[in-house]
Image 1 (cartoon, rainbow, N blue to C red):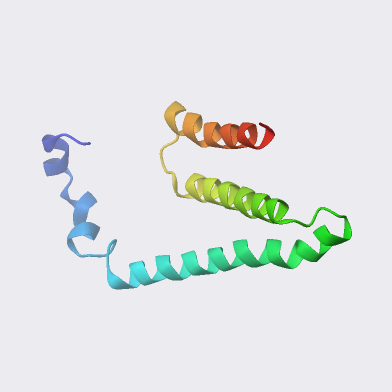
Image 2: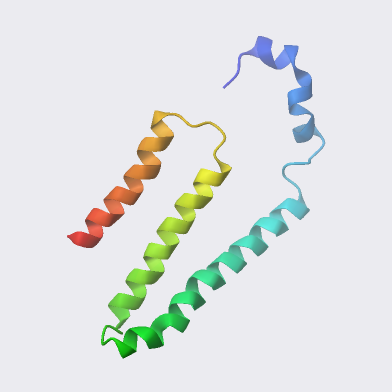
Amino acid sequence: DMSEETVLAFPEMFISGRLGQDLNVRAMIEVVLYSIIHSLILFYVPYLAYDGFLNQNIGDQLSYGTVSFTSLVLVMNVRVAFITHTWNWVVHLFLWGSVVFYILFLIV
């Protein structure tokens, strides 16, 4: 992504990679733990709200699955937005495009 001249002119940009600060066991364990926590939240919030669905006569597997997957799509897009450092038209196109296509998929 960068020219060889830029890399050689600014070697301090890559010191974290050489020291193993970005990809190490601790960082991987953190990512796995965050993923487990997010998956538990995305499963149990709709699961615990399922009784409310039953009270309104909309409590079926389709409703539960739709709420769960919609939560997943929205949370993952927010996560992508938080970790994106460079915002350009391509990022906006795919981020918002995925939400729009998902909503269109729900409607159809």
